[in-house]
Structures are given as C-alpha cells and as structure tokens.
Image (cartoon, rainbow, N blue to C red; front, side, top):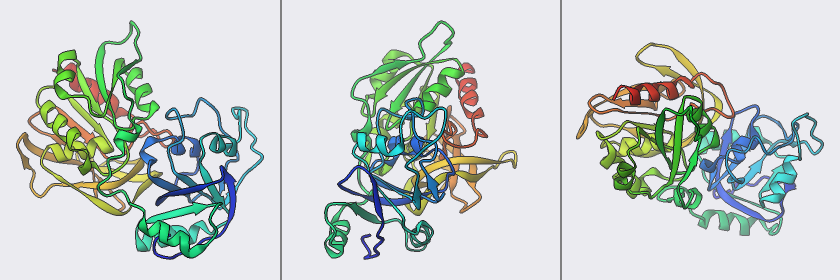
Length: 356
C-alpha cells in the first residue's frame, strides 16, 4: 500500500500487476456483479465476506460487457465452485479479462486499516516481489481525485434497449458507466431506453424529444466531468431528470452544490438509509467514494430538498429540486447485488414523466 503497509498472500485469477485505490465491500454475495460494475474502474475491491467464488460465475450475471475492477482481494478463494447456474469458475472469468487476485491475507485487518487510515492506492503483483519497489509504485500512482474515468468506460455510440410495443415512455440514459440492471428496471416499468455516451450534448438529447433523462452511475471524480455537469445544467427545467450514484453527484454539482472525497466510501449491500419525508429506513446497495453537500438550499433552479440520509454517517443519500422535475439518490435502487427496498424509485421516475 502507498503508506508502506504490506500484505502477502497467494495469487488467483490472472498473473500480472494491478494498481488502484483499495476499497472494501460488505456484500455477502454478488462478487460477479461487483467486479463487472464499471463504477469500480480504478479500484481494487476487498470483499469482507471471507469465502468468495463458491458459486462460480455465468454470463447472465454480468452488469457490463467485462470486468472493470482493477483487482480482487479475499480471505479465502474457492477453486471448486458448485451451483446449478455456474458455467465457469470466478478465476476463469478473471483470467479471461486479465484481473489479478490475491487470497490468504487478513481482510479484517486490511478493512480496519482502510477504515482508520482512509482509502489509498495499492498494488497487487505476481511479477515484482520487491516490497519497497512496490510501495514506491503505489505511492507514485494517481488516486481518484481529479480523474475522469467515465470516458474510459462509456459506450462510444448510442444504442437502444427495451424496444417493444409495450413501452410507453422514451428515456435517454447517459452512460457514465451504466449497469445492466438499471436498463432492466427501466424496461420493466415500461420505458424504451436509448443509451448515449457520456459526452452526448444536451442539445442533441432535446432534439430526440425523450420523456425523461437518466444520469447513470459511474467511476471517478464527479468534479472532473465538467462537460456532464454543463449538459445536466442545460437539461434542468426542460425535462424530468433522475440521477443514480455518480448521476446524483453530477446533478448536485449542476444545481450549485459541491462534492468531496469520503474517507473510505460506501461499498456494500447493507447500508441503512432514512427517507426524511416518511421516516422509513431502507437497506440499500451502495458504491461511491464521493459525497454531495449544499452550503445553502437555494439554487439557480429553486430550492433543493434533501430527501434521504445515511444512518451510518449522515451523508446526503437523496435530493430533489422543488421547482423543476429532478431528483436523485446516491445509492443503487437497481441493487444487483443487494436488497430490493429502493426499486420503487423507478416507478417514481415514471410518475414524474407521466405528470408532465
């Protein structure tokens, strides 16, 4: 690790070197969905659940076209998976996409170190076994602050999802690193979805005449995506907007808020979030390393209402604009993996579009 901390273990997956910001994920299952989430670009994932790989992997549980996490750290890796849906081992999938893994280390100690010292860059290597040289490499590698990783994971051309006669609404989804289950959920509530690249101009969005726009999840520092903030600002007040994770942060910046780096981020499928309007608490899936803050609720587009807060650290987990149709959540209502408590938000988005 960049601070000189060293862990030694056994290799699995591909051979090579992986460099990235180390984060810990508290989900008990769903390692394939986690590794294929483009939001993990630039990060090495530590699973806090000790036994990983036991149910293998398959083509159906991919959240994108490939594995995007830089590396994987586990306590114990299962090389002999057993599950009726398994078509390959997780190590086979990791070799296919060149992802390096390490097992046999004390993941509890690593998690506590990240919790106390904060997230930092680290390196996993099967090639260079000199500790001091690896520490220097990690120290000199860039973190996530100031990095636009959305351009590295976005599609380059628009494409359509969910086209059928039952679709009653047309949604344009910005692909900053969009997960497949977001598209499935939108199609499930009757939406035809056109997915567009991260840099797609707002003027071209409006020329297509959609019923609403979704700002997707994605990796990296939201403040680095100045083009996305500008496009979001141009769309505010003209069309209903729904932001998820990075999309929530971009909406916050477009409304005049600011973003900041969390000490160790939120990654897992068991994060409690309180709905401030009803007092209800929902268990959510989360994956973000930045937060949104407003110094004052008034913006150029009217007042912003904070709708949800994390019960772990009171960070902003949801907001809505009171004068224009726009709302967002910091967590992942599409789950995958995780609980389904927040799935209602897709229906809320449909209701907003139909009321226009």
